[in-house]
Each structure stands twice: as structure tokens, then as C-alpha cells.
Image (cartoon, rainbow, N blue to C red):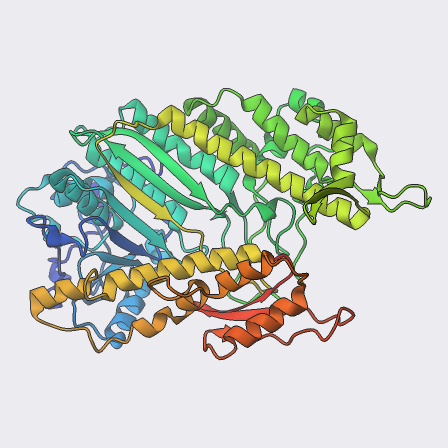
Length: 614
């Protein structure tokens, strides 16, 4: 899997654009960190990358030295690429506008914070070509006198070189945090980081080790099992990922490890209108062989509408904001190609049970087609299955008796007053039980897959690692948010608070570095007030008082009977005076059709949540 286009021979294919270009002289230069001490980053063990851009793999000439080719575009204002410690709000705004107008995708705030701007000119430039990778590798790591580094604009390749240098010289583990809204390009930036680390860790510049070869295929597996098409992005990652690239004591890549968390498993059975489930289901439907189609009873070929879990409802007219342009799903040929890539990636990463893996996914697809009907005869107290052939197929693929699967869908065991009781389910309850089983199966498959990959390609004796934290992006649904959306946005809120403290905290952030370098104080920045929502959700910074999550847990574990009305009344009473909490009108009774809801003023906007499912 390559992220870069095939290089051309013509060196004039790229416009030369350095900071020392005569067309840009006389303007403000860049503030570049140095390798000489640990002050190159705010914290030697962490660096922040905010709102990364989606890379564009364009064709570009091969360069052997940083002098043989120049990176950039004409008429770039260096002021828009670097901001010093005394930058004002107007200067930051001007920098963002400049990045959008020119083809400079990044600008730096002081030394360790890189902001990426998603602009079409930058996407169609050569800034992410193989030549650019080599130039930044030579200038930011191999060039000991650092003279070439001063002539380059800020770039994610430069940030990677900083992290790798600190790992090699200080023997300290590093972390790069990718933070941004959904669709801002975090997944593609994570691929850029992995590829650039391969270049830095290989003296010859070639990906020639088995660990590097295996690591290059991990992204294809994650894209299949943890990504889905949303309104904001064609391939949004719907899980949190902590990816460790492990190194030997000589700086070579020894292995890699993935820690996945917060998988959006509800997407398997339901999702917002206009969005799709996880990519691997479409890969399987369109990319399976003729024998597999016959075995798994894909009788309607690539007709997605035949499977309930794969149907995509169109959003109501006027519900989607104008800035979200709904992109049609890829073609059947594209999915078939991606299925071939997935098979190769699984083989490279040591997954030998591919057939069994895909068979469980086929079982989930058929399980979604199972329908129930309420009993008409009073002698029957449970819902009956309307299409038993679908249960037979799902049971066959799961390797369980049909009767056992039918019973698992029709009955539910509950603990009532310390006694186990069997609950007879109607059609609605049986449908919920079916969906819960499908979500649990996919959840187990995904984490088994991640754990198996880690066992095959991870090196427990690695000396150090560089970790890339990729959070699922913050999203404000057009409809009421669910509990899963609440959990996702809460995780992003906590990450935002961590970055805020790292940037502006007097003890841990760059405020201390700025004070040491320029004797300048940032006490006038009222950043603490930005953490009110995080304190509302999880309590105060010291953790001495519980927040809204603690109140939800108390409600869920209460021994006395509780319902949604009691929950809303409790939340309104406890947090109604908090400026970050939006009280919702409580329903007046069980017959009230108004949905019980509350809202949170997050750092990226207000979101209303329904308590159904909390």
C-alpha cells in the first residue's frame, strides 16, 4: 500500500517555493525549533497536531538532496506559516486565511503545535509526494547543521522528524495527537506519519524490513473494520485508535501495536440517515467470489437493499446543512478491489482464519433480515419468527443449533430481586435482542482481530515507541444524539481539555516555555473557563466531585425504580444552573410524546441528547 504517486523524471514539474525565494524576501520568516535541547517541543514526550489535512499523493520528481528540488508554491506569505508566542487572534485568523488562499497546508504556533488547513490548492499540490518526504527527512533529521531546515515551511513530516529525533537522542517515548472534527483528515495524516517514520528509520530510505512491511498493511484492515461513510467524510474512523510504532535501540522499526477503544458498534444496526455501516460489509457483499456468494447465500448479487443492516436511508430534504455535500457511495468495482486489498492485508498480518472471519460477518448480515411477529394465539407468549430460513442461515454460519439461536432471540434472562427470571419478548423486544446480538458479534470480531494482529506484529522487547493517538472526530448530529454520541463527544471534550492544559498550562504547557524563552506571561489568557464543560461531565480537575457521568451512573445503578422522566428531572435539578448544561423540557407523563432530552454546550457547539438508551 503506497501513499505516494510514481515519481516523474522532469524536475521542473514542481514550482520552487522556499522561504528564501526572491519572491518572498522581506516578509516575516519562520520560527523553527532546534534539536540541540529538549526545548524543541513543549514537552519532549508529547506533541500536538490539530485538525490535520487529507494528503494528496501527486506525482513528483525524485530528489536526492534538498538542494535539487524545492517544495511549495508561488506567492506564499511566510507570515501565514509561523506564529510566535505573542500572536494575537487577528494574526491567527490571518494565518488560516493565508493557508487557504495559498497551497501551504500547515502553519505552526510556536514550536510544537501544528495546525493543518483543508484547502483544495494544498490537496492538489506536491507537498505530500515522495520527493517532499525525502527532502524533509534530509533537512530535519539527516542534516546535522540544520541549515536546510530553516528554508522549509512547516509540515507534518517536520513534526515526525522532531518526534523521532527526541526518541533517538533522549530515549523517550513520544506521542502525536490527532485532533479535529470528523472529516478533517486524521486517518490520512496517521498514514503519512507511519510512512515518514519508515523513511526515517531506514538508512537506505527503503521500507525493507518485515515489520515495516506488515505495518503498512494495518491501515487497510482498520479502514475496513473501523471506518464508514458519514455525512462529513467518505471514510470516517468510528473508533479511537492508539497506534504504537515500536523501535529497536538503533532506531529501526521493530513492530507495531494497536489499542482500539470506543468502537461505534451501534452503527452495525442503525445509523443517521444518509450514512452507511462499516466498510467491510460492502467489501464482502461486492468482493466475494462466486463460490462464497453461493455458500453465504448472497442470492441478489450486490443488491445492498436486500440486507436490512446495509440499507442507507436518505436524509429528509433540508435536514443536512449546506456545507455537507453528500457524496454517493463508491462503485461495486471499487468495493471488490478493496476486498482484494483486505485479503492481502490480513494474510500479511498473519490472519489465517479469513474464511471463518467473513462467515461471521455473513451471519450478521442475515441476522439483520430476521423478522418477528407477535403471537396471535394466546397460548403462545413469545414472538414468532416470520422468516425462519434467515435464522437457519445465521445459525449455520455461527455454528450453533437453530433452536438455540431462536430461543436467544425470543427470550431474555433478567435479574429481579436477586432471582433469575426469563422474560418473554414481543416482536419489538425480539428485534432489539437481535440487534444487540449483531452488535455484540461485530464487537467481538473487531477486538479479536486487533488482538491477533498485535500478537503477530508487535515486539514486546522493543526499546521505545512513537504513538499516534487518533480520536474519532467530534460530531453534532442533525437529530438528537444517542448515548454513543454522548460518549464520543465526551472523549473529545476531555482530549480538548488536555491539549488546552498542554498549550496554556503554566506548569506543563508552552506557557512555561514562552516564559523561560521570552520572559512573557500568558496569565491574561482565560483558558481555564474553557474547561467548564469537561468539569460538568466528569467532575472537577482533581476528581473530588462527580459530574454528570456520575449522576447517570447513580441513576442506572439505583435500586429503586427509575425512568427517563426521573432522570431528566434529576439532571435539570442538579445541573440546571451550570452554563454548559442545557435543560430539556421534561415529559409530563408516560403518554407525553415529547422526547426526554438534555443538551451540552461542547467546545465545538451545542448538542442535544435523548436519554433513551442512557
